[in-house]
Image (tube, rainbow, N blue to C red):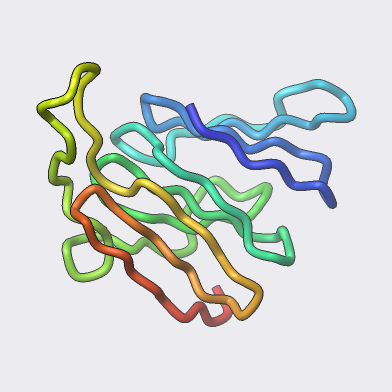
Length: 129
């Protein structure tokens, strides 16, 4: 499970091993929304600096953008040209293997940076979603 906290909204966004996203209101300690975002485990979540949009990255290698209160994705980065290959990294180590998207981060200049188990780091300039 992975999570990301939105201080302005006072919400916690979590991603699970079955591809589900849960959004919790921290003030009320209640689940606000739950939906299936991916067909595989969510490996990373990050927020845009304005905290209006968030991104999820899966073990299949695809990345999707979402807005709070909307359970349909705005845009998907998928396939080997935009997402990350679902290759296995460290498969010979105890505890299994890592695959797909490993980390997502959006910087203050609206660049989405992702790194994957395929050994690649990708940077994308984000426009209005």
